[in-house]
Image (cartoon, rainbow, N blue to C red; front, side, top):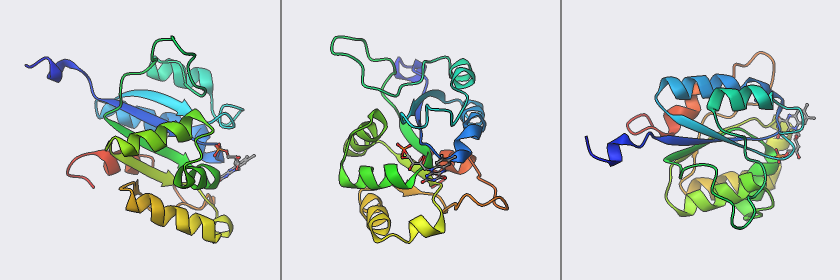
Length: 175
Ligand SMILES: Cc1cc2nc3c(=O)[nH]c(=O)nc-3n(C[C@H](O)[C@H](O)[C@H](O)COP(=O)(O)O)c2cc1C
């Protein structure tokens, strides 16, 4: 085994402030079953009651990141081998496409695309919001940057949010 083989693959899970974020533990479980080590980056709004922060930290073994570290502080996570955004909100998608890096989550997303790291996205955006032309432009722009999207999810009760699709999007041979 080479030295490189011994470094476990690291996945960033970016969590935005959509109601479905309460179930993000399902994605982390599925990722860990596929041998990923997971670090969560949440938007500041998502940290404000959208999911169980303590439970997710216990599950991943890492503190959740939401703000930039201070200069001189150690980097809390290893570099990512892949990044998934689930759920992705209307707000974060539009800021990401426009390059408005005012949260650690969006700043990280802007950076990893530039670094060529695979990024998979599961949006959770209502049909009403998705009809906004800025959102449609954002999707076109992000797809043009190589960002991979799962089927759109509108957040209605009769639909299942299939978290594992996010993992399929970033795994070789599954996309
Ligand atoms: C209970 C609740 C559920 C929400 N669900 C969604 C959603 O599914 N999709 C979405 O785009 N915004 C949703 N929002 C609105 C976002 O939280 C809001 O736009 C926020 O600014 C997004 O911030 P973020 O993109 O930085 O996470 C929801 C808000 C609340 C209070």
